[in-house]
Image (cartoon, rainbow, N blue to C red; front, side):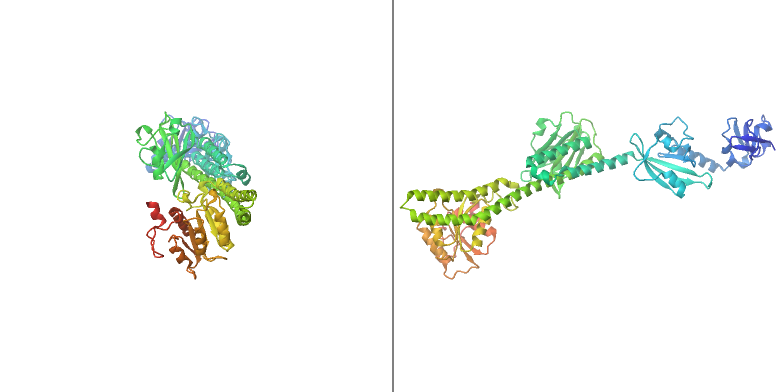
Length: 605
């Protein structure tokens, strides 16, 4: 048997190691007697099995392979081999076979395209060289060495220099422990990674929108905070989401008006346009605000809802600002290109819209909190000085009684003291009102509903200092001017010495006073003012002297009664009733059983 040397070692003519095969032109599998003529024995390499043919084909002198019919693989197996080759070649993922030094033995078309070497043979290169020496992301170990060392499948994520990302999986194949191989699959996950990075950046941006530290809160005014929020929103929408034409409107809940907050790249006429949260005639913005749903417009030419914000707009994306199922406003972005926005853009803008809603709510809470803190400080100061100032007023009118008719100069001086004392209280109250915008007024206290109380002067007469203090707290929050007296004698002096601008609109008195009853006080006051805008209070309906009955018989309004302890709404209702009636009882009053109109009925007339 002749021996020859092959590129894979020294083999004999039956495929065993032997002499050189430089003259070999044909490989024969099976009986050489079946060979076609024209080949000498020296030009033929005889093999026992077709499975070993591939190992011999590297020699450039080989012109062909002859396989006897009886040694051919089954046709199904041959067809499967061909189809598998085509599948691997055109697989949408990259695939490669690596040797133990992670050099490429074979790579499919997809992997060579990604590597930019479609027309080249990457055999012999390392997989790292083929992919442009990428970095392994995170703390992952090299998946190839891990697969070799553990004998198990391993994976990792590679990032290339041109910011592409690949998911690589490697698994050992074959049972040759001396020279193991790896089968490797490579998937392009660039879009997925970039989406994740963009999503993380949006979440970071959302956290930073209203990230105001305590020092910043106290150093910035409300307008400055709004400007900061607008700048942050503008920055992230343009730089992070790459939107160039932006409009944000906030919804006025009472009127439905969509008020412009931020406009970038919007025509001035469009920015000034009146829009309402209504699905008809208010564009996509009005539809999104009224329905609470997002709207992706691929081509504005074919969309009847669209009202352009810029002249060359061809597509738009509109998302409502929603917090706790309540629409706060809308974000609208536009583009001069048809179908410029995708479902991903919609998803990202909806996520960022939630962050904007939270930021707006946080800003509103900060404004309300600062206003409430200022109001509480003013209230605390006012509460601390209210009763002492009332004592000054009481003492001043007592002193003034001694000088009336004797020393006009002293009376004028005491009147100035009275005026200055009253100015002190009013100044504190006015400061508190200026520091508290209407938006910060506690729910249920409507400035319009209780406008009747604003500026009204109320005198409260009660021996209990707690009642007098509560009168200041409860009534002054509605803009009333409250003064107090301990007993009937002080109250008479306060009413008698009140100037033209200091007359009391309502007088609230307990039925049991140190010197007189509430009814007796009412009759004394009737000598000074008539009618007397009186309200009488009693604890739990206790009235042993029938003070209220007598007062009703002498002109007390039937609704001008309070039973302690009373609720705030009851106090306000009674005060408003007396103010509307001007202290006069209805003409058809017939004693305590009379049925006067309520405040609601008076309002409806």
